[in-house]
Image 1 (cartoon, rainbow over the protein chains, first blue to last red):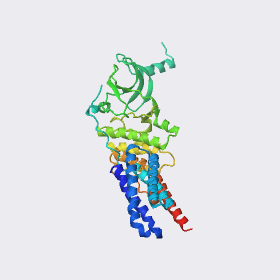
Image 2 (image 1 turned 90 degrees about the vertical axis):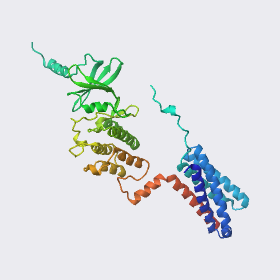
Image 3 (image 1 turned 30 degrees about the vertical axis):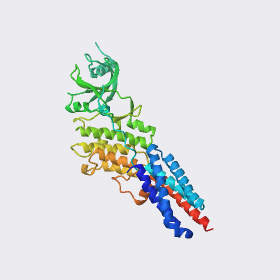
Image 4 (image 1 turned 135 degrees about the vertical axis):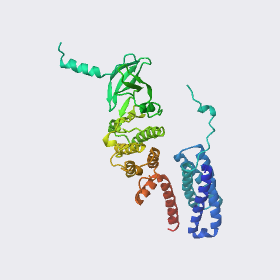
Length: 125
Length: 275
């Protein structure tokens, strides 16, 4: 499983779980379907970019930082569309982005290395 | 003519030295003495380098020639083998500059470094086993750690060697599993106090009196050590639940912190909304 796929899967799952917590807010219950879909898509986009970053840079620290930054950015975009609940959307999005960034660094296979040239295996005196 | 005691002692000593006339080697000094021969430091005059010469008290055993064909980074390379003018057989090998493992441990290296050394030793033994050679006398005195951290397994046994009692497996007929027994004792020897339970269990499994209950190959032994190093459960030990949880926690500390932060944020937001 490559890192981009890991990001997409965990972004989807964690985004859906984050969206599902809206159920605990009574005034958000009627909109739970839309929140679930939106939160899952947001998680997948964060996962996609975090996975791509993990392929390029191998660093847990930077993975978390970039994931958290992306989570914050996309949560801000969602909050701007809502024009409300900035803190409730951005803060969990920020932390969840960090989780996704961490998971893409820890799990999944990195990019396939370039094929080794046949000359490399020859013995040399 | 009467000779003084000191002269007689000197003559006795010189008479025991190998006759290197006609060879490319110039004797420097004795550096070790084992059950089957003596090791000297010597200078190769053709290549102007120092070498170690192992001189046997009897014709060179066939197994010594087999050992000479082992090419591995942790096995001292043999440069040349032959017979001296005094009839004794010898081989010249790389002169290793370093510290014996038992002396090296006196510097209190970290656990990771101790395990690295054991890993290198085990890899050399596994390689030799794959070529049909067993060590027979593995002990801290036969492992050298070089000045750049390189590890060498020395003094590969020959049939005449019975092994050192404290490191010798109980079975009468030695086979590759006898080396695994010695590796278990060596692992226990290098572990710092208090010994991690999982590593102690690995050592004890390797040291089982019944050879059939030990690791059956050195690679199995190595794999269990690697599992420990990666924070995974080892095969030699059924760990209690609390230990499994602690291992999971230390292996996934960052992830647990992140989920903890998420739960805290969610709880605080929920709490603030309802105040």
